[in-house]
Amino acid sequence: MSPLSAARAALRVYAAGAAVILAQLLRRCRGGFLEPGFPRQPDRVAIVTGGTDGIGYSTAKHLARLGMHVIIAGNNDSKAKQVVSKIKEETLNNKVEFLYCDLASMMSIRQFVQKFKMKKIPLHVLINNAGVMMVPQRKTRDGFEEHFGLNYLGHFLLTNLLLDTLRESGSPGHSARVLTVSSATHYVAELNMDDLQSRPNVRLWRAAFCYPWLPDETAAGGRTESLEGFNEGVTAPRASNSQMPFGQRRGTSQKISAQVAIPPGACYSAHAAYAQSKLALVLFTYHLQRLLAAEGSHVTANVVDPGVVNTDLYRHVFWGTRLVKKLFSWLLFKTPDEGAWTSIYAAVTPELEGVGGRYLYNEKETKSLHVTYNQKLQQQLWSASCDMTGSMM
Image 1 (cartoon, helix red, strand yellow):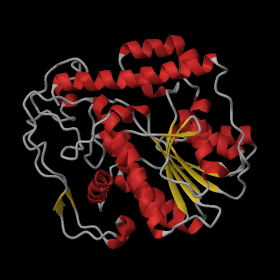
Image 2 (tube, rainbow, N blue to C red):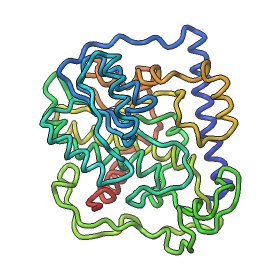
Image 3 (cartoon, rainbow, N blue to C red):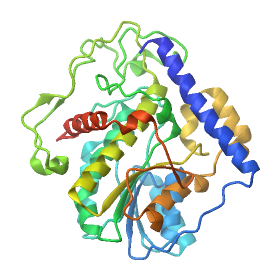
Image 4 (cartoon, rainbow, N blue to C red):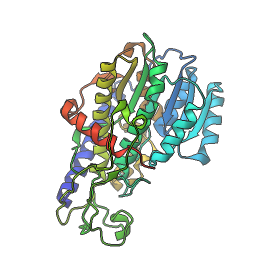
């Protein structure tokens, strides 16, 4: 996108955040965020991605307190042992464990699923919580733009690989649940089906919101040579039937997207890429719910919006936002526990038994962006995602 479009994307993202912060301030002035009451969940198993920090940690901790067997999926090996020990100590629940899963690597995701299935245990709740926010342009191990690849594609693949276990675990009156964490930034996002990778042109303009302080090799995706051909479609190798979600068959290698003509002077917008990944998660969840309902399985899929929460995700945002967070987070931002309550509510409340395809904020259903209900767009994104996550090894 052009520098002007990148600046507009950034302003839209910050405007969306400011609106949420204002709403949170008003609610705090009227009594704050009171912890809901949650029913006990003995003999149920949950996976929480990104459960070693922030909202994910609080989610894992509260689910463990309710008696769940909690498996934390994350890539922070050094912190995992301490986190698991702390949750066990605080909740008096020994059924808490960590399994390594790097959502920026398709191979790591497949290895995680393989290790989990070797345990021969059910799966009642999958919480797709992990993510990165507004990081400088980087690629995943499979060559995808990091926001789209980790926040969205990683969870797309993880969910589809675990669907058979979720189906087997759900039963009438006790559905298995898939919960995906999005954010209010999806309201200001645009999904570009011709360029899901947010590719820039090599002739990057050093403009505001486009990381002008970064060296060329960082701004150009870690490459110092010419980016000729950078906008070529990604080729997916042949995938077996068992690897494709819902039995979709794929043939030989094919182009995932056609060549995209990117105008000279275009630059990478971390704000637009982050917002797009959150929009994609909503579209994915709604389409997943339609497919699950059509096949009559006892699995539901919902989206949760935690609000603006005081976590470590803000290290790459505008310096003014970091200053506001440092000085006023106690008043304007939710705590990680408060941010986790909607995820916990969606995971355990009897009110959502058998109910899917909802966007939940502050433990209540609300409307998502109008385009997220476009079934044609949902299908287009789903098909493209199947292609991109076929067999990457």
